[in-house]
Image (tube, rainbow, N blue to C red):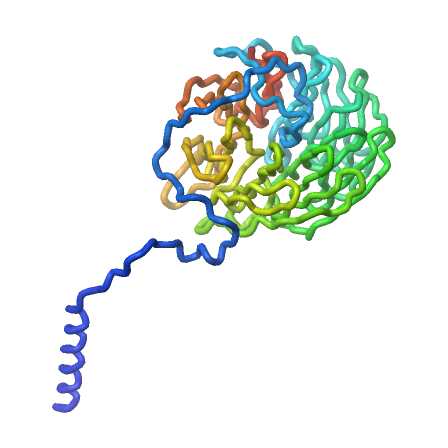
Length: 440
């Protein structure tokens, strides 16, 4: 008993002595514990405070068309002309809006004085510049019902409207009458927007297969695949095209570049990493469509990564630890994006460092125990010298690209469900209820 007490006493003294020792603080830069495991080239240290940095934007251009998503330089209007105070001038129904099972995923396109839209139930509508319906075309297969599939996208080129649908098809329509010229089955959901380029139509189906299809006949020119992945979000990324290359993003987080005409793969890159402490961060889907600007490809994932890569080699130039919920917009030596945290950010295009970030509508309802539903924010788009974001909270917001300050807010009845597009000094956006709104 005495021996035990003695041992305990000595142990207690040793513990007190250990506690009294002064902790040695190691000198040096602190690095994140997981940095070594996440791969990629880290950007310059993140800036916690927003900065106001001058930016030289491209001059405003009065464009008459908006035919594609913004990834392909040939179709991107760098700074579309738009008035300083756009107001609602007309609205027109396009069909079924968002529901629990179905969603509108196609941004409107504008060509030859018509606005083309795709509703949540695979119906294409052509609307005039004054809001009158010109024609509609239901692309639901004969043996299916409209609510059995959802998603799709639009593009215009070569005198045709190209439409993908959740029913797994790519369809070419006559832009004047809406008549079907041809249809190609994709053997999987076609929820992403196609891209037309010099006689070929490029599309991603099922989040793991790339297609090049002849625009005049619908015949398959070539295919390319990635690893299948089931944890995806609705809407595959739209391919980006240059004269030489086609760049695709997939559901498993891979980006591939191929020679545009023959389909031979040039390089592939995986957007490794995920946003920790967030269950949705495990979804690896490419949600920031590939965007080409000069010799650089910008792309983002749902898992908390935005990267810049060399167009010719796929070499990683920088990595930013934020995801992208839509295509990034490069302009004036900067890159603008909506992150997976529902934040509008401006990054330095050279190294990915943050210049400023602005919080966008996020949780619809938030408590310490539960926060499930979030607002959707679409864009960004550079037009009229401002960065524009449309949200389904019923607002469209205009930001100063210099410092991120909010300069204007415009009401969108029922909230937006697509990114805004601008043509003919008019801004078009589709609402959650299936209404096309025109602001001028």
